[in-house]
Image (cartoon, rainbow, N blue to C red; front, side, top):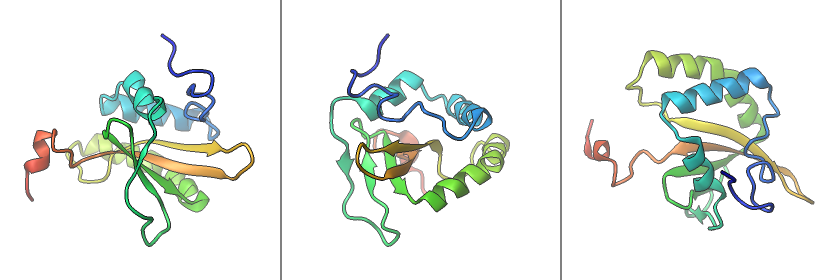
Length: 142
């Protein structure tokens, strides 16, 4: 099965490029498997022909937030420093999530970067949209 077109294939938008090494990519894959994330659904949510929905204006950090086309994921732009930091804690994050299945930490599904043709590299993190009204656990109050 081929996903996307030549203009929106996973490789052309940087979703499958793993500039940070095989061990890091393996950890992301392990987390995605642990969270029962279907790679095809993930890719389609992020690379389909529909435009991402922007969530308001940037926050204090200057990051922009977007919803995937099906509203299942939140995409947050991050600085290069934040990108490096998330990469540096990935091993510990992975261990914590596996050891604590009911953790309240955000579920990070991927850390990516896109290089625009005549522009800067844009770093972003993909997170699950935790308070989706379709999610029965979203009504639980703590």
